Length: 343
Ligand code: NAD
View 1 (cartoon, rainbow, N blue to C red):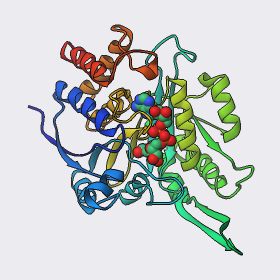
View 2 (tube, protein in one colour; view 1 turned 60 degrees about the vertical axis):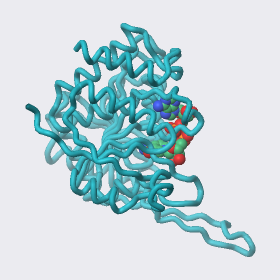
View 3 (tube, rainbow, N blue to C red; view 1 turned 180 degrees about the vertical axis):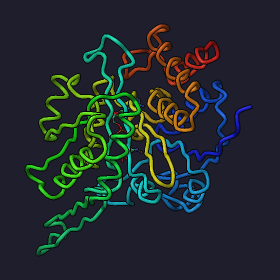
């Protein structure tokens, strides 16, 4: 019998509960051995516990060191600081891995198989921001300070090189803007070449590209890339771009890996425009659950899950609206469950 695995569950905001229900249904059909501890964060945290990141949620993840998380709403401009960013900081989740792999053949971009590694706790996400008031304008000047450290860069780069090599990948490309932000992103670029020379030369190739050119190249010829590794903000933007190459945000999972925990989530947000309608595409969160199964070394179940999703999309032709289909979340989930049961 497979040992039970305690894990924290955060359904999240907006479409979160809808896609989380769908994902849990499929995990149950797979007999995934997770013992869930349900907690809240984001807007749900504010509503239920008066706190976007309640202590009980932090305590739960500290204990389980493993979580599946739906999207969390973060107000733009003012309001509370992102619970996602705080979770990454609290558990030192320095590596964000976002695979972009074609699941539906024949699209605008076929046979995409890209891996994006994003530094997850430093850079311009540290929240070192303030306004300077002038005369009667309290927001006359806005200032942000980015921080990248040699050690932080080494952590994510080490993780990216090691993981890319273990996956049999051939080339890592560092994405930067060291021509303009010579110190802030130059340190990342410099550390990449140092580390490669020290530990990884001969095992995997390394090159680099400036972020603006990278965006253009990804749209013109994405197949020239294999594995991208970059700083926090560029990684956020590039991984959405890569999601667009494989069918949109509904297809893109993410893993936040660190010293003290691992948190798996969809790349997309809470999609308030479609929340409550029962039409969200649950694939991204299901694929995130697949990465979580891989993380706990249940590779067979992870593979069955990915195959069931692919067969539902391509053999049964069942797809949600964002993929041009007619199925709602429940119909799509039922079809994946049927595939899982026969796998
Ligand atoms: P979003 O990703 O929520 O939505 C962008 C667009 O993609 C919307 O049109 C939405 O309907 C569509 N979309 C996203 N996921 C989908 C799915 N599974 N199925 C079908 N369509 C889908 O981005 P946004 O609107 O910019 O952000 C909304 C909120 O989510 C914000 O508060 C933001 O801070 C938060 N957010 C959270 C996370 C996270 O928790 N990791 C990530 C990104 C954004």
